[in-house]
Every structure is written in structure tokens, then in C-alpha cells.
Amino acid sequence: MGARQGWRLTRTLVSPPGGSKDWVDLAKGVAILAVILYHCMLFQRSVGLDVGGMGRLKTVLEMLPMPVFIALAGMFHARVVEWTLGDTWRRRLLGYAYLYLVWSVVRFAFYALVPNVRGDGAGATAQEPLYLLLAPVWPTSSYWFIWALFALTLLLWLVRGAAAVPVVSVAAAVSALVSAGLMTSTNVGWDRVLEYAVYFLAGALWSKQLFTAVSRSPWWTPLAGLAVWGTFAAVAAYVPYGSRVPGVAMLGQVGAVVACCTAARQLVRLRPLSWLSYLGARSLHLYLVHIFVIAVLCAVLVALRDRGALPLGPLAVLAAMLVTVTLLSVLLGRVLSRFRWLFVPPRALTGRKRPPAAPSATSSSAPAPRAASPRRTS
Image (tube, rainbow, N blue to C red; front, top):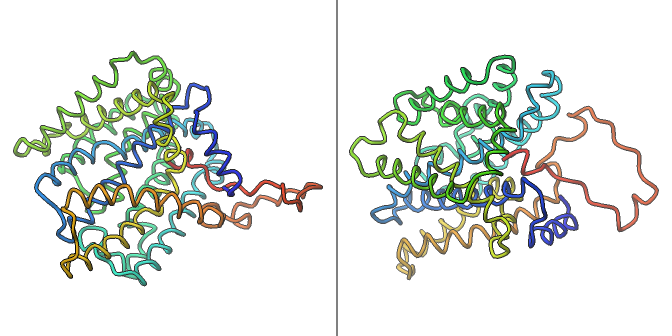
């Protein structure tokens, strides 16, 4: 989206307008903040700037953001079951494939220039050309989420004629096994698709019912969801082998989704929380760029630590990183949003004809082109 449109959206989100789905941006704001915190923590732990307890916090955080994003994405994909495969490709799949491939290349180019301080998991493959070539079928980066949206959208189209209950039930059984570590493909993208498919399919197949349920949820629903989330998170984090019990992580995720969405519906009118809605409306851009900001800051922290010039403890560093990364990611996202090709396939790929120019198209008041809608992709 252009700068002018961005400022209009900023003013709008200072006082959220009426509507039954205003809570979605606030829920996404909470989720993207949890994603940033989670990745800040992973990078810190990778370079040895951690303390006891971060591992348990990681277990708790894993239950919240991605199930929320996946469930909301499913709820906004309900019409896919009515489309042809060609429509699904043009309206969803092409955009996801393009976004994933472009940003996989951007990520590879970034780590070719910036020291890769994270040596664990997906971070270890950041500078390997082979993994860039395999990215379309073997996702190893944090952009697995975009890849998963492609796979889940295609899966939704493939099961469009089946009854919802058996489809969601099978997905729930698979999720229970994968989240417990009893079933794995050894690939982060494939595992996340298997684990989170239940939320996407349930969101899409029961979209109307879920939106209605959230809009009519009583005041105590967020508390009940929080209790469920906290209970199963505690089992996973503190009970020996508790996280290996099928269903423990999945039920914690369900509680987190319920708590986040219903609390967002009740709190969206509070002006002091409007900044969360602001973040949620830009969750796509934040998701795509925040890793780069974290990597640069973490490289600086390592250099300061090695020189004995790091005055803060690990928890203070984590809090400072969360705030700094969020602010810098917002600014970076606003700058990059001016480059439409980073987010939207060119017309040569979509097959759409360029619309005829309006009489005032060359004037300074012409609206800037729109970038990909965060709501569609998150």
C-alpha cells in the first residue's frame, strides 16, 4: 500500500470503526507480537544470551500465534470451496507462491551479506544455495507460513466436496500426533501443515458459525480459553514428557485461539489498545521483515558481548529487542510497501489487463497502488 493509504489506515485504526469483524486486526496484532517475541528469544538462545525459563516460555508461546493466524486465514478462505481450480490459482495460490519465492530469494540475499548469528534449526540453512533451490518443496525458513497457506488452500479445495466433520476430525487426529512429536516429516513446513491443518480447515468450513460464536461470546469466554491454554501449557512445560502426550499441545492451542479471538472482540473498542490493531493490519509486512531486523540487532549484541560492553541482562535484552524490532519492522515494512512487486505478482503473471488510465491518473492526488492485503495472507 502507498504512503498516503498507509496514513489513512493509521488514522482509521486510532479509533476502530464499527463492524462485527474489527476484532480480527487486534487478534492478529497480539499474534504477530508473539511471533516477534518468539523469534527474538530463539536468536538470543542461539548466541547464548538466555536464562533459565526461556525454554518453558518457548513452549507456552508456541501454542498461540500460528494457530491464531492459521485459523483466521481459514475463516477468510471459506469461499475457496465454491471456486474452480483456476479461480483458486488466480485468487490465492499464485499470490502465495509468488510471495514465498520472492521472499525466499530476499532472505538468501540478506544472509549472503549479513552474518548469520543463528545456528540452530532453519537458521543453519540460510546461506545454503541448495536449500534455496529446494524451497518450493522443502521449506526450511521462517517463511514456511506462506508456503503452508499455499498448501492448506490447495488442500481445502481438494476436500471441498467432503463433509466437514470427518475432514476436521482426521485433521485433529493428525495434529495431536504431530504436535506431540509422534509423527514427523523431518521438515518444518510439512510438519506445520500437518499440525495446523485442523485450524485452517475448521476455520474455512465453519467460517460463519465461528464468526457468529466470537461475536456472541460472553465476557467469561476469554478467561475460560486462557485457563485451558495455561493448564495444557503447564503440563507441556513442567510435567515430564507431558508435551509428548497426544492432544496436550493441540488443546493448549485451541485454548489460546479462543482466548485471543474472544478477548480481541471484547477489547477492540479500547483506544489504548489501538496500536495492536495497527500492528495486526500490517502483520504480513511485519512477518516478512522482522527476522532481518532481529538478525542485525543480534549480531550487534554479540559484538557488544564479546567486547564486554553489554550492560543489560538477558531478560532486559529480550524486552528491549521486542520493542526495538517491532518499531523498526513497522518502519521497514512501510518503506518496502512502496515496492509493489515485493508483495503482489506482476500483471504479466496474473494475466490481468492493465486498467485504462483515469483522466486524473497523472495528478498528484491519484491513489497509490495497493499491496497485498495482510488479512488475506495472515
